[in-house]
Amino acid sequence: MAIRFGSRVLKRAEGRFAGLRAWERLFAQQGIAEANTDQQVQGLLSRRLLSTQNLPLTLCTISTAGLGVFNHGGPAADCRWHSQAGHVSLHQRSSSTVAVRSGLEGGDDADASGQLGILRSEEVLVGAWKVELETGKLARLADGSCMGRMGDTCVLSTVVCERSPQQAPSDMVPLQVHYREKLSAVGEIPRNFTRREGNPKDREVLCMRLLDRAIRPLFPPGFCHEIQVTTLALSIDGENDTDMLSINTASAALTCSSIPWNGPVGAVRIAYTGGQPVVNPTASELKEAQMELVYAGTQDRTVMMECDASEVPEDVLADMLRLAHQEVQKLLELQSRLVSPNAETKRKIFLTAADAEAAERVASLAAPLIEDMFRRPGMRKAERSSARREAKRAVLQQLQEQGAMRRDNDRVPGSGCVSQADLDIAFAAAEARALRGMALTEGLRIDGRGIHDIRPLETEVEDQQPASGCPLLEALQTRDVFLLKSSKANPRNS
Figure (tube, rainbow, N blue to C red):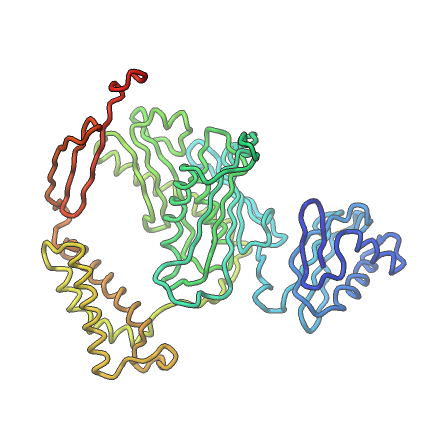
């Protein structure tokens, strides 16, 4: 079935009829000129829709203007029919709208729209601007959606997650973050020949990176379901930026969804101008700022921060960080109020983690080799990579000699036997624990340097024609080349 309204088409697997004309023919076949009663609509839909077993339907909204369905302006109806394959739900949100929903009873699609029909809106004052978050109005088929406003700037964030995990385990979250600012957000039309939007601009790419760095660390370890976070700027007023609002709306969308996530996270921008910190500064205030701080954090920790500044005292930076964390708490409370009245149960997902017994066995063999590798002073990156491969190969050889290596399908959980996936995951976890322990307890970094030690720097200036200057900066294996060209050599640019 395909139901067309406007430019959208919502399809069903069995195409028995298409368009609103099919509904008109259906009414005519049943001898109903105008369905003015709930009972007529219930009987019609129950006989017709439940005659096929190709459920579930997708959620759709049908405008009934011209059909006369529920145009009597009576009380809202909430009708539900059950069949062996699934259920079809009929809801009325207004006097001219019917929503048809179907999903397997208790199945995966049954909770695809957890915020369906529940409109929630909360707001809080952050700095001089009011931040408003709203869910349940747009993108109701997504796993989570939220619309955020600050001034006349408005963004929409949606979250969709695959039900089945990736085939092969991965050591990183398969997260895609998309952010777009279309010209329609500022009331313009693309001026190119095709009148179409082009590739993402640099600012959009930077916003994607901010979003990614703020939400990626909060997914549980071993999360291997593909997930996509999409943020669209609906309107931009030119004073309030969209990047911080995008992080907060994406966090609210994830928190409202059934996707396991250790959020929420709040984000705020603070500018230091005129000797005073300004929370959520406008574009004009940012131009005069001595320092700009972007901060994202949870209730008890910092997730991401970025600073662009002239020379400012360290105590000013410390005060701004404390202020940013305080302001973030307001946004976290805002998101909690948005979710708590209708909190969803987080779905059960597959996590790519090593078997506990296998991980303990790998860690006991790998820990001394990793400690020795990290404590070698002056080791270069290529040498460290080679030493890591040798250490992992040595662990594998010991496991093979002990007869503990098994194929992935043959390994019995809890037996202490190790598969190749267990070895990869447990070895990486042992490296992280060793590196974290050295940094926190001894103040040592990966090559034996202390926290305040810097690598030796070397500089060199070469004469590369036609460049006016070509300095070279080297810090061990890191080399930067700077090219300088004076425009005075060209008479047209002088």
